[in-house]
Image (cartoon, rainbow, N blue to C red; front, side, top):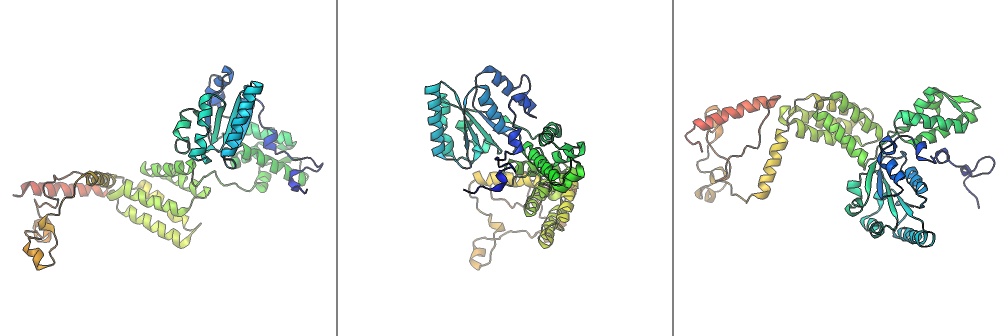
Length: 439
């Protein structure tokens, strides 16, 4: 049988990736996650207690979720059953249950069932674990890159402690990268290690894969070491981690929106570039900026909506990369524009009122009367044409359904154009009070 050649070394042995060869054998060998693994921290305490508990490890790729689950099984001398939710189904879950029963009944051993990418299991598949977690047949450890609040059923969440794992910092990655080069017997400069840490973007597995790639290239070229320039030449720049449908996506668009709302053009530009660099569809960003112009700026600067619409059109005409400059111009404009959510708040209040209110008829005096019958029925009778009134305003007139009190939904701020709008509305209310038809 022919096997892929890249699975073998020159000696014919199966090649084991560097990341697997350097997988930590003890908790102390793990890098990062000190908030969970340092003395007195939750997982360190759990390991010393001798009593495992079910948990969900939530974090980005390459931060040690699988390694941590394996180390827990080793620490508790438990049988370790790994299931990949990408490939497995109810059949594999049943097999894991039978194996756990065998380990308990014949060997007196506990079992840890590790489910990688647990968010990919549907509700029925996740439900299948519940009775066995509840009975203590095995300890459940799930790993996910997605927010468990949205992707894991409540019943399972209530039976498992959620631990958040963080991206590895440069100071966490540096010793890991150095260890990798030592294992590959290649000398690497500090700059080379720094460049690999940047490419890895907080992912330990990616860092070691890059180390292996650079080391292999160095051997091919007969080099004894690697510097920053060599790393740049060998490692094609990996895109920043960006899951278009996952937690990271919503975190970054939230950061962009809040930076605009907070009037920080530099932060807004940073998150825009991060998203574009990560592969987001620029059209999505342009749509969100149109929303920002309406929600957070509104009538304080009506031109913001025009700028956002123009930026979206420019991108449609020019595409990437030329059109992205228009998006950058737009996001900076939105960030520095006067802010008001008065329109957004007023619209929400009006929607809430209409949703719970009855169907009120249109008052006769503001109904259209295109036919003689309608006029005879009183449609449009006593309607006051505002343009014929002093100051172009029919003071004291009501345009709301009969019996409905005047609401105060739109409350303009004193920022930007809304300051002038506010002055005008105050003047009109004063004319209403002076009118004989004040309600």
